[in-house]
Length: 64
Ligand SMILES: [Zn+2]
Image (cartoon, rainbow, N blue to C red; front, top):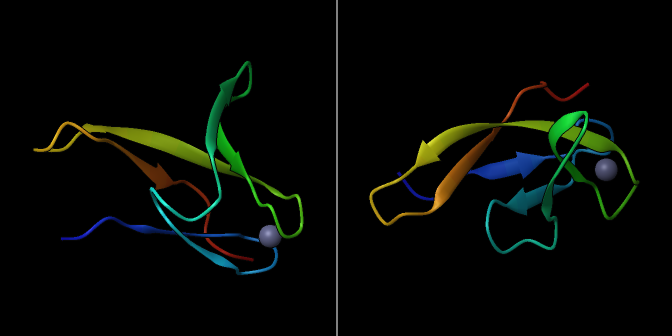
């Protein structure tokens, strides 16, 4: 399977997991990315590293 897509849960903009302009961050509330379109916080969870050594991050929440 190829790299996953993140989909903003508010505006439904799609971002390729590694290249799409949405950057994962970690703070005291946990892993997330901020949608650059609408500013919505989207929670992520770590799936660990894949075979190429990339850290895979998956969205927790379904789009609204
Ligand atoms: Zn958005």
